[in-house]
Length: 101
Image 1 (cartoon, rainbow, N blue to C red):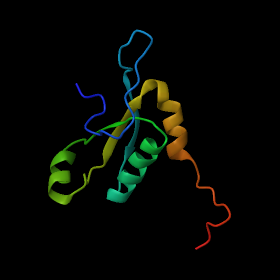
Image 2 (cartoon, helix red, strand yellow):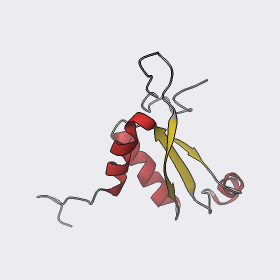
Image 3 (cartoon, rainbow, N blue to C red):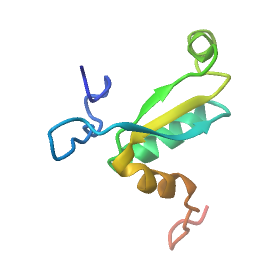
């Protein structure tokens, strides 16, 4: 099984002390448009947190037709990284110098 889930540049799924892959844990349901989905997944990837996605209901069919799953997407991360992933996705943006538009 490919534990990078088809993402060659993505972070590798971690292993426990016995060399077994860590179990996935439910992170959250992301609904909305394609931008909402991509921002969440790219944030996790940027911070080195591997993830897998599942499209509930007929989401895979909607992704095929519309380009994104209209029913949203379920995101799973390694259970050892669950709290970090929650913190990343719930963090407020911080504006600093040079961020003026």
